[in-house]
Image 1: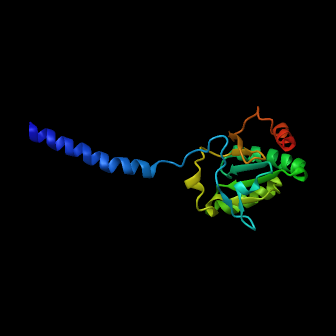
Image 2: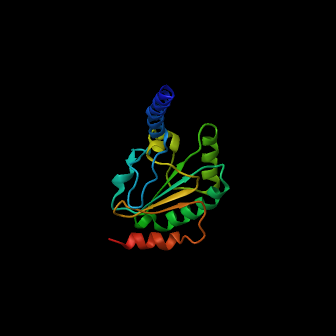
Image 3: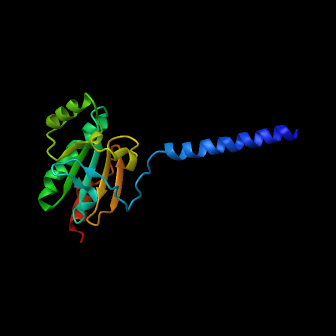
Amino acid sequence: MYKLRRILFFLVLLGLAVGIPAFVMNRPAPEPDFGSVPDLTLPLNPPVRLLDLKGRVVLVEFWNTTTPACRETLPEIERVYEKYRAQGLIVIGISLDHGPDRAEAKRTMRELGITFPNVFGDDMFDLRAKLTLTSPPTLFIIDKKSALRNKVSGVDPSLRLDSTVRTLLKAK
């Protein structure tokens, strides 16, 4: 009986020794808390750090071509961009398409008349390490203090993007 307990004890210790590090190393990246903006470098020309856009209102739209809701939200974001970009609004799209879908993403932007800058998430080596997205579309609304004011996943008919942007642009 003593030997059996001893063997079980060592097996439990071994399981903990292997399981805990494996769990810690394989857990998903944390979601940003409201108030914190992920430190992402956007592969624009020249590259732009999201945190360096302090003083500006920023919308970051994560999207892809395989999600119908993305085709619904992109034109609305384009409309808000066209209306407020002269007042300092910055909009950046991050396409989560990869491989052959990248060409489809470019076609989709042309078809929908998207003029705001877009980058591909695959070109941001640390994107998945710094951020977990449940599903596109996901919109980050960032205020002039570089605080994450809202994170909207999917299509939200109650979102008043126009008035939200206008309010944030007027804020000091």
